[in-house]
Image 1 (tube, helix red, strand yellow):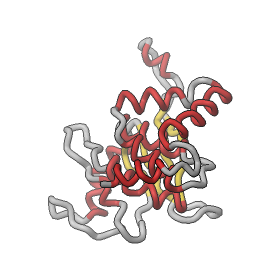
Image 2 (image 1 turned 180 degrees about the horizontal axis):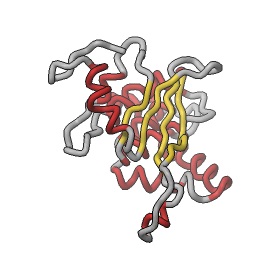
Image 3 (image 1 turned 90 degrees about the horizontal axis):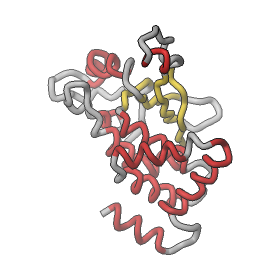
Image 4 (image 1 turned 120 degrees about the vertical axis):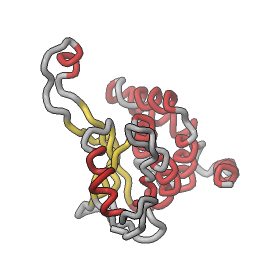
Amino acid sequence: MANKKSPAGWTLEHEFQQRIRPFAEHAPWVLRITDHKEKPAPVFIVKKRFSPNGDAKANGKPSGRPYLKEQGLLYGLPLRRCLPVIRAITGRVCDDAGIPLELHRFFNNGRITFRGNLPLDEEAGAKLSLIFKLQERMKDMDRVELIARRVERFSREEATYWLTRTTQYGAEGNRWALAGMRIMLGGQPEDKAVLRMLEKLRS
């Protein structure tokens, strides 16, 4: 892990262990950075925390142990193209006191050496999940980056709404929603307007 100093004078490793890791243990979403044998490193996996007995808890009964469930992954060239957006999204995540965690420091401009879980709030988790799902099977990296930059501009409510539309309407409904969103946010393949819009959003 990088040895960059935090504002408090801690190393990034020390700050992760003392401040960020405990928060990740109960955050509603996490971004896991890991390695997979058959995929280029690193692999980013966004996971959502679920309670197996959420309804029972709402009724005042004991609930089961919460668990994390994968909601999308990103690696290789799509990851490199989306990394500036991921930095922007994670850079706005705060702790329970509203103090920024500055998670973008874990994604430096060189090799990403950090491995572990980083906490995400509802907005960051929904946005990353959408980006990771929408880029699947896309070959045009300009469209992938354009989609990521447009999702990054969603409000929390917009991100949550569109994620729901792509995950809670059955296999066919979810697939159709993703296909429609790819066109809505990233245009058609070989459309020259894609690059023009992308350059505008980069500036």
